Image (cartoon, rainbow, N blue to C red; front, side):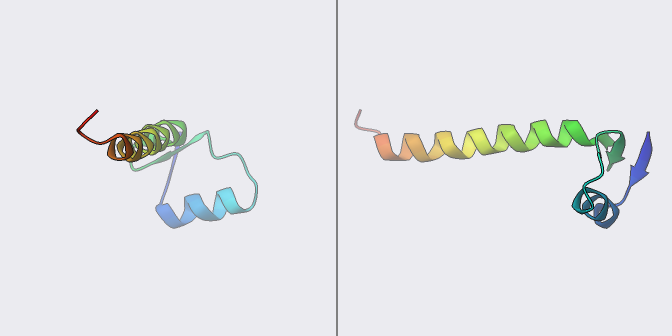
Length: 56
């Protein structure tokens, strides 16, 4: 796999090219997508738990 810098990854993605075959900071781009989805889920869960509150 070809290694990309952060800026190169953005430029490649912005042009519409498939970036799945590249690496960013030593990990394949799809791994970073999964990490982002997990963080997104955790943030949503934190909001829901905050709305529920410790009383319930």
